[in-house]
Image (cartoon, rainbow, N blue to C red; front, side, top):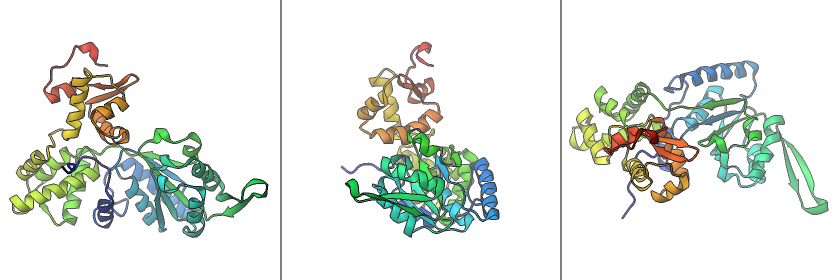
Length: 341
């Protein structure tokens, strides 16, 4: 049996990323909805850098998936009027991969975007240190007594790193970023604004109430909001004359098993597992991942952040602990008060 699509998983597929780059991704800070303080600061840093005719300082964005890290990196390139080269931590397997990119594919002021930067190979990360500080790259040639070290000058560029797990970044790497921002979950009005823009781009008619129903189930994440919008659009096209209304949205959400709190079947299964198999917790992340048959990274990076942000799950030194709100949502009898923190 094919695996059921998880619409509330905010990891993007290659096809979806390509499509959203073409259509739904904002192309400027003015179009980018939400993260207002971050945008205000970036405008100052961009204007100052352009005024001095210098490359923007190295930037680090960290947040759960789907909140706009990749989008912001492309916006930075457009606002600065430079090119952007995109790669990811696992792709850079050895320092030579980095050398080729720095010396042949980047020009003065360009942006190098490294997604999942916390997964950089240790040797590659160490090779980045002098590059980020002095724009010098050192590469060893040969082995043994005949080995030599080449010193290469690279253009003054901007490194933009993105990570969902900032705690896995080493101190020396993190300290070399001059601009560090944490992207938070989006509020309901911001998600509605994003959906309104996306509906216009997709040429889909929608009522404000219909979009609000989608926003309530989007987990404060633009990527999920746009994904749900496209699925509700399908229901509207087939069953409601192409108009997204509250009724067709509710029908679509019921069919997709997404409840009023934005939880899907996997979220509820995880909460039920903690309640029924582990007495409400505490339970370790690795044990819980095995119990729900999910990868540990998916559990910690994709599922847990929203559940904790929404008050359904607590992370303690002893493990994951179910909250009273979770018991009420699942329709289960909550344990004694002393169980909760």
